[in-house]
Length: 195
Length: 213
Image (cartoon, rainbow over all chains, first blue to last red; front, side, top):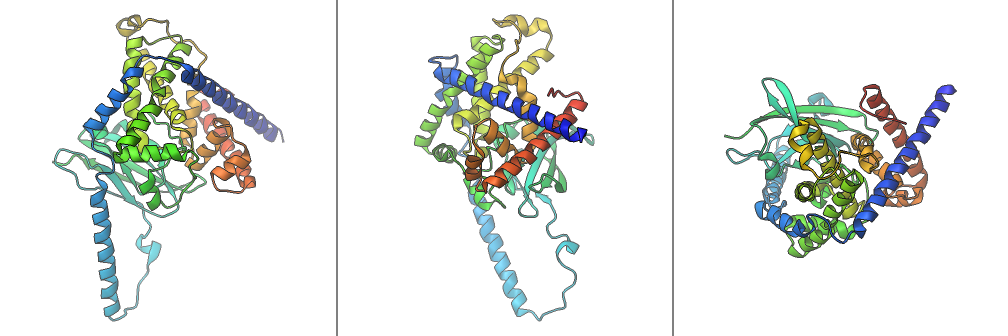
């Protein structure tokens, strides 16, 4: 009973704290919106244009993905046709016994000396994935290069302007979570820069 | 630097189409279109994006002022540049649940906070005396960085609900509409999310990472 009361009290404290954070941020944004001038205000356009000038539009890389998907679809159809023509066999264990639905990190191709422009993975549907990337040297993890974040997809872009400064060896840690936040599996991969 | 994982953020449109589940429905559709088209290289969208991002130096200026002006005007110009680059780098995660300026505000907080931390790690003689103002004074939303960090570690849906409730000040009915769920579920999910956040902050507090209910 007292534990419940304590939890309720902490719950109330937390909601008050969150209200205070929200109120203060709204106040700061309003104050900012009311400012007529600020250091750097006249540089906004120039800075963004420089960023755009140094990197191609982020979707430009997607055409190889579409080609890949087309090729994969063709392969699946071909396989299905082949199976239809083949005599039926007694099938062995399938599904999870064979590891279907396992979480696997895939490394896309990259130019020599470059990191891939995205990381992809396969795994169960309906989950969210948390990706973290760290420096990896001498068998040990180093500084964090990509902070953990929830991703509702099977890939994460890795822009060149970010990966350019990465070391030659990195470790990718991927965790699958259900909507309750419970871990549903994890995968790791160690990548070296393409040579 | 950790990113404002605004669960107010999800993958960009083409990724959402391929995503296993769509958590939320964007309410700032125009901003979302602007972001996606700007990423796609549309010049009109990039012009609109520039207009939205003019809030960045203003927000940095206000935050710096509230902190007791630890950064000079020249440093604020650098911070503006750093923040804009970071925002562009992470724009693919913007999901349109908050307006672009509100979404950008969290980047301003993080960049400022990150620069303050790195300054504190340096010897006092190298930089502190170069700035105009006094060292950090309390009283800004940066004080609550641990709260944001904890929210970012929650599952995306929990983080979205908490942010919509407390930072967007939506009612449970509005949250339910935004997240395409019944209002009763929104309320139940909110309380469950708060409990998770409390537990997380509690763990951090026990580890001495800062939580003061």
